[in-house]
Image (cartoon, rainbow, N blue to C red):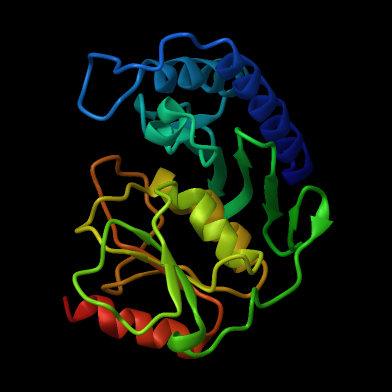
Length: 249
């Protein structure tokens, strides 16, 4: 499939997941594993059906690795922030990222609560709701001026102006890309799978913001068991500070 066709497929999938979520009545646990909700499985089933129909390989948080012999694999978090969704907090998303031999190729992250949609195609920039995102996010360089998003809780104050812990990393990272947040730090210990950040990583990359693992490891892979500690900032100066701080914990 061409990048354009993948992008259109992702929009269709995000629409279908949103429609399915509007009909959910049971927002409780799935009973299959800790932290998984019935709604996660409903969203995953919608995504799997669409991707299988196109013969694409799949790596999903909810159903694992499904090789189809395709040179393109789609990394999926059908419902990132499902606890937020279960509580009615409007910060949860569907994240889709197609990768090939060169890495992330096409991405979509949609806030399913309000419809905000981030998209990116490698080498062609990124957009929010169809409008091109400007390069560089907020441009913030100093920690004392920064509004920093977190997953988990930092063990000490790093000197930020304010912080937010909203717990949907795909959206948190996209918020760095569009300048809503100045940085993002995973304060937990290797808790994030590639599905949590792959789509947002390409959105960030296309506006000149680098998402890194706090400990210098490769972020994109096809192993469902691998966990990482993602981090991003609007500028290299702020990122250097956040990386050094995170490594010191």
